[in-house]
Image (spheres, rainbow, N blue to C red):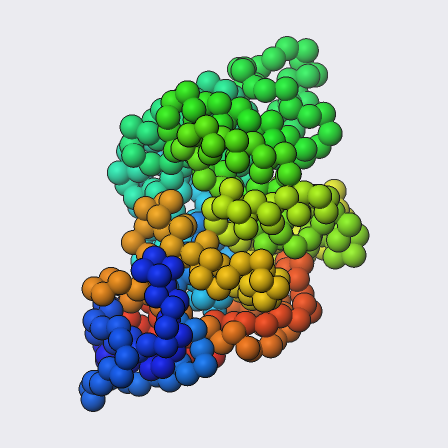
Length: 437
């Protein structure tokens, strides 16, 4: 592997607080030197003049669909989409088919990632066996097999006892719980069945009083999980925060010493429920789009640090699936190839976040929360680096994406700022929108 010498780029590394025009020398898969006027005659020189060099982005919430739903996305195509968007590290959700609830399934997913992916790929494991919400998985064994967190993403953990045990076991395994704090179709169907039978099934034992209105239970789940996290002193990470009430609950929990972190997705920062009619089913997501008041609160929570990080919740579906009527179309939208541009255009450019703050929330902090070897430009660290052209204006077009998904609510948006080079372990895997394998 040839040495790479990145010349005259504005290096932004929130971890080391670097923000200066510098050179970076990459030797093999490591960062060998950072400084001014570095010379190495044996290196491939890459001009980064007028551009920004940052640690590779980290997305801790992606659905790569493999195994079971390869027609929607594969680990390979998902990794291509990630590299195109400037992400060098991702964490996959375990709601595949079969779900990632046993060590062999975790091992197989990571093996596929190693053999077909072009970025660093980690995975979560299921909280409950089969994602059914009845019995807890063997958390310690799953973590020892490579899972970096546990989650039943797509479904809430309805049982209070199950969630309590998940937090206890996750703490024993020195990991974290990342629950889906909102209803799901599966959850609602089980709730209807329990009501029809006129008794409370074991699945619902100990749940909070959730709202009768569909998909408005996020804050109830978060409140319950905060109480359990406080009781167990376990580490809790709240995915895709979308309600003003949720932001307030998380802020209060942090002030009271609860070991909690949280993420927000671009669609909950930029779109409201009023956009659903205009966009159609590509805006159907869970948690759903909320009111302007909620969007403002989530955005403010991101700015003031209540919400720690940004994650895409990349969830591809086929055109045919999303062409169904609203009630039958699946939840989810894609985001790996748009997240950076949306953040730069709508948060950094208006001055809501500095570039350094944005990179911290998309690289340094996600890596820290999930204990990943990523998010750093320190000497000797793995050379996962991106080069951003902050002035590049472009129009989002999902038809040109590397992802198999086309369910993008931001199609035809004009944006500014793009990753023009993605380097993973010292190797260029994307240059000027082209994947290099």
